Image 1 (cartoon, rainbow, N blue to C red):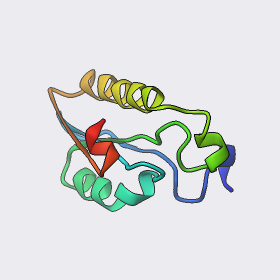
Image 2 (image 1 turned 90 degrees about the vertical axis):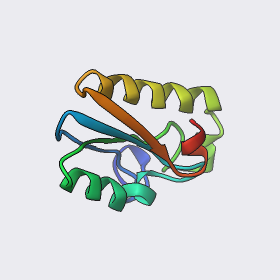
Image 3 (image 1 turned 30 degrees about the vertical axis):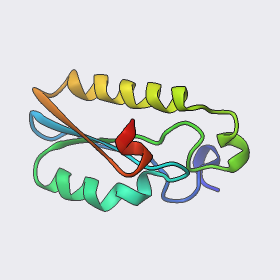
Image 4 (image 1 turned 45 degrees about the vertical axis):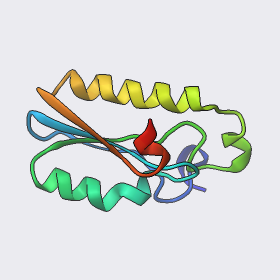
Length: 101
């Protein structure tokens, strides 16, 4: 395991680009690694990007067992608020459960 008990590649990603932002949310039991190439493509296109690691994900099932959908939604809402504070418009996209959030 990497930093803070995370699996390698599970790190969140953020990029300060232009006035248009994109929040990407990974799926259930996933991590930012599953959307990292999409995030990189959007960043290279000049967009601001936020790809957070949802609580309990990217570590172990034991840690995930201590989180709920309310924790995941709160993390997505916090990332949306942060991105919305620095962008004129924000698009939200996700994979599977991340799309539902």
